[in-house]
Image (cartoon, rainbow, N blue to C red):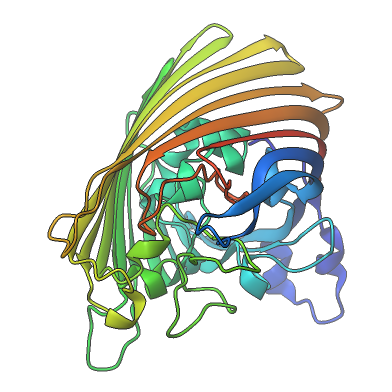
Length: 415
């Protein structure tokens, strides 16, 4: 996503500045984004006297994190020339809600990114901190959701296709581009005394771009994903379900697509994506395969007594058109198939989710645009909670039925 940035030159004039800082540059950047959305069948409670969820239509103001082209944020990024082609680099990025001013990512002040490292044009870069996995760097940027907003992601963003989760305590390497090829790897230290593998996350990926064609592959593996991948924000529970909730008579469900699988010992995802540009038309396709292994490894998070493993497959096709330099439109279709739970003590049916996404975006200037976005989802089968599957668009309160639609009209400003 293009960003217009201001140089924060005042930092160089601080009294504590010294000669070493004279070769440094620091940039302040950000996004402010919000919209008004109409949602059908949004749950008001997870259960009713009859046993099913209850829902009503909703009109609400949302921050861009849930329902727009980009989440509201601000950040600082900088570099210092160390000589010999080597630079010290850093980025600190904080998400926030435009509606309330609250800090995003569960109250983590620099929850979107917080890292420091070294970069060389010939050898690549190594960074330490809170960062994205290899999918974020390679396959995600080629998908429709990454470019058109969070609710266009796959149901409940179970595969992190729209960067809803980061890796804490991570070490990352990104190579330079060699004849169109680039590779990278990430390792998140679990930090558990006496167990090097507990809560660890590792990821690898690569891309190739030449002319109109861009392709990418990535793989992510996370141990104890309820903690290492879904529970790494300050508001996460050390013992509870961080992947979602079953809801109650007074509260809606959360992430019913995956909430019932929080007892898994391992989550792994392999992803592939490609785009090809024909003049002003960009055609894209993507495939993700995600497995949750070792269900039942944490008995306290397994009320449905699952065992074995479960797999998700997602197929995406998209079309994006630049009608004019200032006006673009897009459409994508996603089909998500979740298999039955292998090894379950009781029968567990599969589930299917189909989603159609539409969008239009008009640039009023280089820094400001207005947009209208829509997503429509249909669910079938049995979800992770052992109930009739309900539609659950990423970032939106789940539907009380198998169908859900959202329409969002809003504005975004980049600085």
